Amino acid sequence: MAETIRVIIAGPRGNMGKEAVLLVNRTPTLELVAAVDSRNEGKELREVEGMPDESARVYTDMERCLQDVEADVLIDLTNPEAGKVHMDLALDYNVRPVVGTTGFTEEDVKRLRKKAEDKELGAIIAPNFAVGAVLMMKFSQMAAKYFEDVEIIEKHHDRKLDAPSGTAIKTAQLISEVREEKKQGHPDEKEEWEGARGAGMEGMHIHSIRLPGLVAHQEVMFGSSGQTLTIKHDSINRESFMPGVKLAVETAMKLDTLVYGLENIME
Ligand SMILES: NC(=O)C1=CN([C@@H]2O[C@H](COP(=O)(O)OP(=O)(O)OC[C@H]3O[C@@H](n4cnc5c(N)ncnc54)[C@H](OP(=O)(O)O)[C@@H]3O)[C@@H](O)[C@H]2O)C=CC1
Ligand SMILES: O=C(O)C1=N[C@H](C(=O)O)C[C@H](O)C1
Image: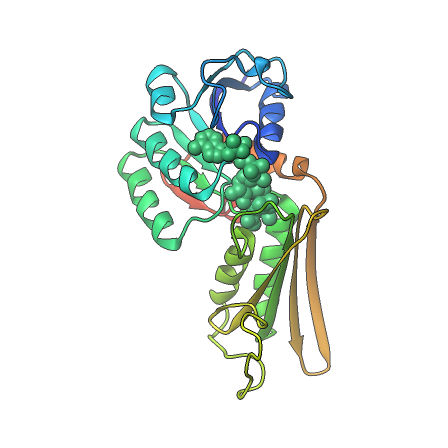
């Protein structure tokens, strides 16, 4: 039988954290050894409303948790500020971080990769754990070889803190690997209302929509003479992300570097 992976979850009451707790709870090869929350210090997780029957202790201080508990992997699903601090601390304490939290810059990723490699630890930052979303990004990268003009439209629930989404940024980065920089639209185009053309990266445009009722959705729309191509993905619940979280936790145990993006570990 495979060895059990000891997991800490940061953000267990959040939309994603809740699903991650259920994932670990139902997976025999994973063991929840602690949770890091912004409240509920010292409780057992099962005493926290909405949590399953897990005896793992809740900490409000990540460093204290890492000092007290023997763990293999930290799953972080919090917010950009906390996520960065947590990831650094996990590496300090030889715990492999699997981070779904978005809002990491390219500089953050570079610095953290160096730290993971210095410590010979696996680490994963995945802007999107949904397999379909990863395929949508890969297909968009393929399409970008044939279409120079592209607009990314990402749509999320209105509780989301960061814009553009981590997925939209990653999509633009993957496209930019195969596409020459190009200013799109009319050369004399002028934004009459600031923001009308969205955010920009190397001439690509990213539009962020936030509405109650949405979960996580993205369309990558390409256009050339006489045709458009739209590649679209929808996550209609947070369970959609969990197979990717499990894959990332298992893979982090075998790596000695930081991987940014699930496409790098999907067979
Ligand atoms: N990679 C992926 O596939 C996905 C990534 N995400 C990303 O994951 C992150 C979380 O998303 P989501 O679950 O929707 O957000 P939520 O706001 O629902 O959950 C975040 C949780 O983190 C808690 N938290 C905040 N600060 C700390 C801290 N310092 N220590 C411990 N817990 C803390 C919050 O507690 P409190 O409310 O008390 O502040 C809250 O319970 C976001 O960055 C989002 O973009 C989301 C979906 C998929
Ligand atoms: O905040 C979210 O909900 C999501 N965040 C990630 C992102 O920023 O891309 C992944 C997914 O889109 C859901």
